[in-house]
Structures are given as C-alpha cells and as structure tokens.
Image (tube, rainbow, N blue to C red):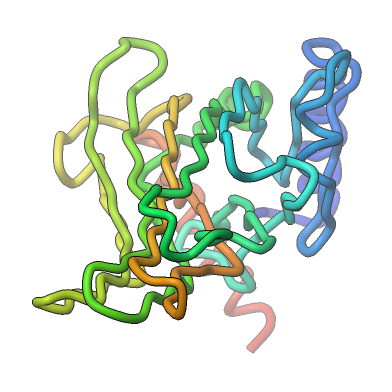
Length: 247
C-alpha cells in the first residue's frame, strides 16, 4: 500500500485486528494462496476471507450439477499499484467448470453470492471501491453451445443496483466472445466511491451434443479502488515522492 513501509505494516496489522473482531474465523489469503470452496462454504464456517485490504463474505453457493468441493478460491492482488499506490484486489475461482453431461439438453449452472467490503481501517484512511472486473477462459464448441458468466453488482449500503456484467464464449450462430469486462461505477455514477458491493454471480455451461463441450477452468473477479476526495491528492503526492526517491 502507499506511504512508508512502517505505515503499510501498521495499516495491515490494524486491518487484521479489526477484521478479527468482526469475523474471528476469517481466513487470510495472500496473492496466490487458496482455500477449497467446499471448506469455505461448509456448515460452521465463517465463510469470510480477507485479501489485502478487502473482506469477502461468501453468502451462498447453489448448483445441482457441480460440487463446491471441486473448486478453489485463490487470492489475487495485482502486481502493480495505480497512481495512488492502491492495488486491484480480488480472487480467482478455479476448477472444472462445464457441462458435465454433453447432449443431455440441460444447462449446467452454478450460482455464487457474496459481499466485498473495504476493511474498516482502510476505509477510515479513505480507500473506496471504484469498479469491478470479470474475466474467464470459457470455451464452447458446436452450434448452440455456450460458456458464460453473468453477474449483478449492488451498492450494499444503499441497496442500489449498479450494473450487470457478462463474459462468454457463444459458438453461435452467430458466434460471440467476450473474455473480460470491467465497469467503472465512479465514472458511471460519480461520487466518492463505495464501501461495499453485493455480487451475485451465475455461471452457465451448455454443450448441445454428446461430442460437444462447454468448459472453463478459471473465473477472476477483481476490484480497483480510489481514495476519497481530499485523500487522493495526498496519496498521489506521497507516491510521487517515493518514485523520486527510488530513481
């Protein structure tokens, strides 16, 4: 995070202390660390994951064809910060997504609903959610087949709908493909940014014939962030000074 190493350590420690009070059984994941989705969603689990300065609370998983234990949640933190020294933070869902019985005429579907919020200590420092990005590597073959992920994003504090996002590989006809989409809600609606989002994610795979396929192996969700007004200039100045010192 921005500013000095000691400040980063202090904020990180404070964030974990506050988070531990709110969610004593929260699981902390670093970049590339993972937890089995079945374990995360098991009875008695807090269903809460902390990644960098974000808290993810996984509310529900539903699928009649796929098992949560077949998938993993992997922490994602971008390699480089933005101009304010803030990182993109999110997670990858990894596993054998797909139509497990091609040609049966059924869509193989999975739904995941969760909340993402800025940890209280970082929110107090002015960090705000700005946008959401959805990426996957789905693929489908043969007419009528498709692999897709659709999601809805809501401002959790006001229960206001913010937008829909979709990524897909549709064999066609006509063929249509989009592997990544991002929506900047600050640019779209204005305002200082957001404390928390509610996200409902729906994954669908349909292989039209027995010799067909509709699959994916990962779905990435990431969120970029922005400082609240007034804080942004200070963070940008601090980052500029740090860059000058390194040069």
